[in-house]
Amino acid sequence: MHELAITEGVVAAVAERVPGARVTSVRLEIGAMSGVVADSVRFCFDLVTEGTNLEGANLEIIEPAARCLCRTCAAEFSPDWPILLCACGSADVAVLSGQDMRILSVEVA
Amino acid sequence: MCATCGCAGDGAVVHGAAGGHDHGHDHAHDHAHVVPHGDARTVQLQQKVLAKNDGIAAGTRAWLAKRGVGMLNLMSSPGAGKTTLLEGTARALAGTLDIAVIEGDQETALDASRISAAGCRVVQINTGSGCHLDAAMVARGLDELGPAPGSAVVIENVGNLVCPALFDLGEAHRVVLAAVTEGPDKPMKYPQMFRQADLVLLTKVDLLPYVEFDTGRYAADLARVNPSAGVIQLSATTGEGMGTWLTWLTAAARCEPRPLPPGRG
Image 1 (cartoon, each protein chain N blue to C red):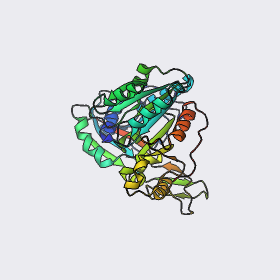
Image 2: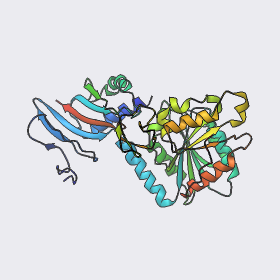
Image 3: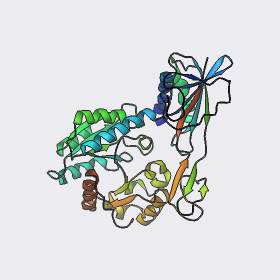
């Protein structure tokens, strides 16, 4: 359950960036290929924020789909995870997006 | 001033009008962008969640490169044979390659005792409730080990095919073990792990006559998830494949071109 460590990382990073402020809302981006389950982060969030300046904060998670670029035919496509295969048959692809996990913004009171 | 987006360097930057702050940029920040929004303020962070871990890992990678130390991150499910492989590796390369080991387990120093008995310097990290090693743990382990220039460090990660895949530890290579007793479907079931592997070691192949395991199909499935991973079929019991593995490891540790094993099945 790495989502617990991930959520702890989110809370620590927010506390560091807006020290002392009461945080009322957190916006996260969790890419479809990031390896993190958004529902598990939601589950951990209330537990991890208890007693911190994020306690009671609303959690909004956006989950962008993955995009890939085929190095063989240069087509851009949404992969059928877990197989990153272009329609042309090539498996030589670069992942353009969908792997990131980012704290986008927070609302402070 | 932030060289990339031009905002003030330290502390918060007020962009004036409420809302509508579309400021997508990817560079790392240690300062926040603040947009007033009624009574509340929106603070733009745009920070990678694993930024702290990745920063430590990058520092470790640079430190190892400067020292000429090759570090591998060995990952698998529990019981795939990581420790047995390391014991055999340490004994086979004694006097040839100086190997130090960072052992990750939730509890006990059982593996560290086995590795130590095989002649390696070893640091045991117990993660307690944690399911993976992170870059800070490995950095502390390296401080304790103090690997000599030209040596190799092998991290035996916590047995788990899910969580360790996400955490960069500063390693030069990722090696994933999969035992034939686990069944052939693991690359498809755990793509995150197998997609990042430089090398897959198919272990316990001496048991192939007794289990249903189609090595050809396994290799094909792995190639669908990770077309560039090399595969070595290996048995620490009979020694099959050990020579290929030792050659690969020695080259990887010395940051030389690594001879990839022939074929995939």
